[in-house]
Image 1: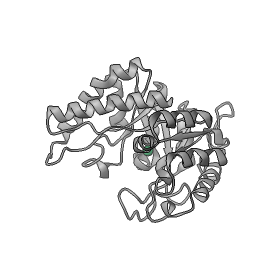
Image 2: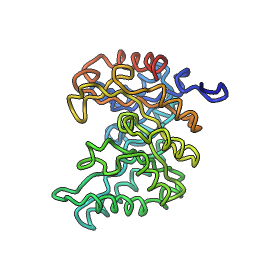
Image 3: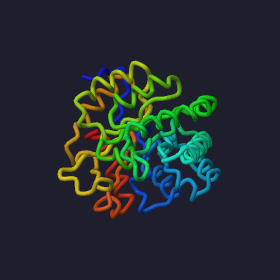
Image 4: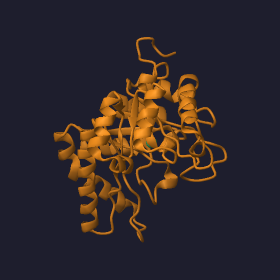
Length: 284
Ligand code: ZN
């Protein structure tokens, strides 16, 4: 049972957020903002390339005018590099990402931390570089009051996208770095983890749960990157995980993020948003 005193994340579309990857093949950012307004979706989480295409100031103005919350900016991270110069380039890019997140009024900057540099087999070194990179931008993030949200990615992405793959691993980094860091929990990446409930509780106790992303895991999954399911179409126990997240004190947005080249990216985007709203109320 979920206590009535806690906010119910599914009952209210003002807490629903559209991660703009969900309709990225159909719409530009301006159209996505208008779509959120039409479907009474209260928040948005844009990607940096879409913001750049719109222009940062224009994007910030349009989001503000639409009255949307920005549940996160996707994304910073991608720290590991094969030399010091490369790492510095990536650190500089993360500073810019922090500035963009501030300009947009984002609630956090989501970090997909990066995998192995090309030609490397040294995952321990990549993980050290993630820590070094985050250390290097932390003061800038703190002084701008922009929380850094590490998104642990499913281990199938450890080589090319993120060498931080579990909630425990991400929270261990947050504990080392301290204030201004936390996690973005995406059910797609962590649903399988036998420690998930315990790590959500751990994050909640320290206020480290910064974002909550939902979609579903299809069986079979036909593409490692672009075959995510709509909530309710797969095998993730969404209501159970949401209850854990609420019990841990999370009262932020519930962000729908679906990469789907064979299905949802081919549909009428208004139909996609309508389905997101319905499923959010029914199965999330
Ligand atoms: Zn995500």
